[in-house]
Length: 84
Image (cartoon, rainbow, N blue to C red):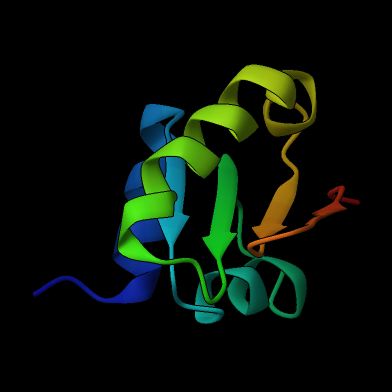
């Protein structure tokens, strides 16, 4: 089972969006300055709503994600934290 550091490093190397329910990835990126590509964190989002919310984020916030944003999505709002 790979750890958070390894998962985040893989996503960064591959240029992938890391979708997670775990706040640890954002903390690694912000507090420890770990390199990352793109992070989307889902908070209190039902299983049924996870795919539609992710699709919405990918379609409407591609520029932010490409710039290395960390996006936190809740049922009724988004928070976008830009890197740097």
